[in-house]
Length: 389
Image (tube, rainbow, N blue to C red; front, side):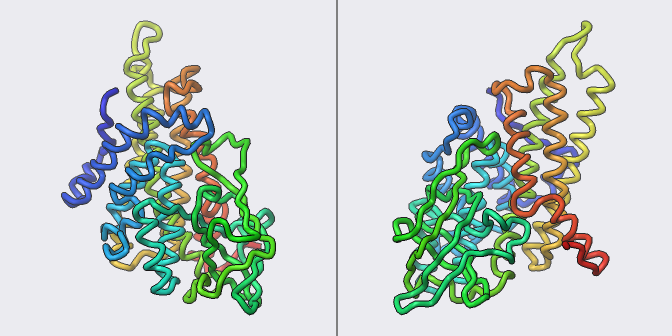
């Protein structure tokens, strides 16, 4: 199989540092050698390739922007984004694993946790010796997380949690869950550990999307957690939303990876597939599709690069992250569908990655804020008028 060469019509590599390019190329090679050859098998079986976790940890894919004292690689946000881009070129489920571990588990422990919690969990999570998950979404509350029903009650020995979370990536695998619950009406974060009495994490099955990813339910029935497992610096809905901004940033980059994989597949196929005595790339309608794909990938690359630079300067606003997530996933899904059209009947075969990326992106478009919710986030920002309800 030929190595992936990338898609860079506007010479955006010239805007990257040598270190950023090195990081990108290292993960690109990892994906080519370790993810692409095995991912279809796992997708068919509905399993996550757990044997990738130690290799991903070795490459610094978990908590890569965090300090080295906690096992982080101290990379900038552009390098982190490029990592997510390449992982999702392999599969959205593999990128989701890394996004959750980094943005939704290590980030809140680092930001809202005590020194003891950081010392205990972050090195384990960075090394892949522990797996984490993030529990915010509930069966009845997705786009409206503030309506959550999961509660925490202070008792003599700590806190008692009751409630349920749904659509939790890594839930069944996780050694620790960052769980959000209402304590006396205020949203607080808690660290719930695997094996704690009253805590179960059954895997959800029957998915047509993100099949190479573990999706779970978290159930708490009088689950007693010790006093030291509350995230002391968390408070209010702002805390979990800060975590979602981290995850959404990685998704915006990841979607470019899916789009590049589909475009590259469609372009190579179109140049070699002969119909009416010439390659289908010679037909105007095919060229129109390919040009549209390339244009949207190029725009997405420029969007993410500037967003990453803003983030590294501490200037990125959550609304700007919403714009990138909304735009890039929307067009990546559009590109996947166009690629399937170019491949014709072959497009549904797992010999090609297109249908898998298309199915995965249906979930990516919905999670971490639906397309519609990001529209309303941006609408409120530019008009000053909230239209959520």
